[in-house]
Image (tube, rainbow, N blue to C red; front, side, top):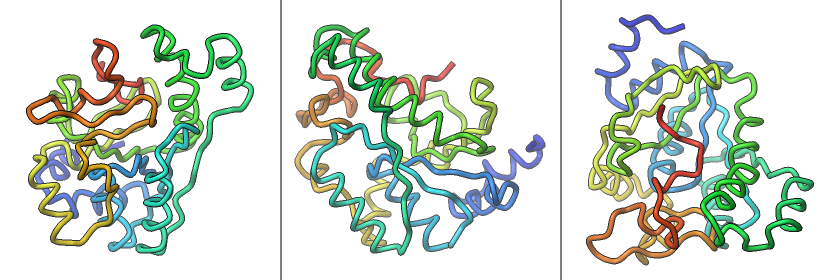
Length: 231
């Protein structure tokens, strides 16, 4: 467990130093979930270049953009890493499609959340098995649900620490880092896709729109899939 003093030290450190402090505490049980978004690409660069003892994984929902897979290959090659891939369980997907239809998530918020649970939440739970620290690329600016999240906090439901090293980073700070380090990123970001999820559930946003407006664009909700619901 982290002491209050250790948590304070982590929160006051630079992002790179905070990553070293956390992984040094749990070198065999720290994992990083990447969606290959810009924030996650920043963290992948930091983790890989510092050769930190972190297992990196991603979730393949089966409905992702082609550009996602291209970036996955480029990231592995660039940093000489091998990002683990977790897929949804086939019987779950087959049952959902049989009962709700291939695109049944458009019909109701309940259907959409059920699809997210099958394709994202359940695979995530498998990927987190045995982990003591879960690193994420969350930033407080991304949504109202995330604005009060701390840099490091105890996730009682999953029984681990959730570490959000970029939580206080601004969008511009993130872009500056990507430019300075020449970090590879999804070209869809340059076409107005700020937050990228599954292809049927993501659209580009218009100037001035909320960054999460392009996710599940047909519904009015908190724009979360269930991975990062803040209690």
